[in-house]
Length: 99
Image 1 (tube, rainbow, N blue to C red):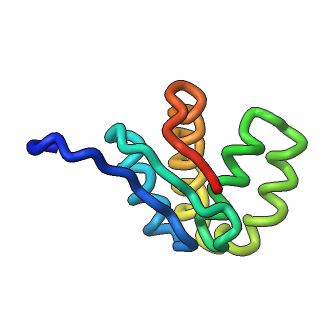
Image 2 (image 1 turned 120 degrees about the horizontal axis):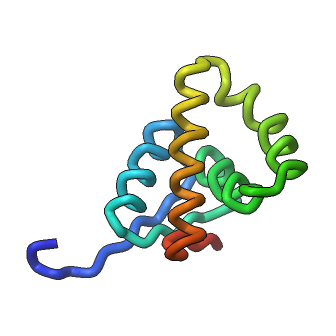
């Protein structure tokens, strides 16, 4: 940032730690490119963003991912909170792109 070098984050697969890294990048104003069919948290996050604000789609998303990521309730709630904030930021500023 000091040198004004543009940056972008590319997300391929990943887990809960990757989500936290994406969250910090988005909240810091960094554009994010998600490779949507790469699996892991990349696919989970882009499907969350696509389902956000649609109750029926969110129920389907939860059914799909809670068994994988919801084993630890605290981690699941933290992930949902971070994803919600990323989705809100994306709605406001279009910081997340998927391919």
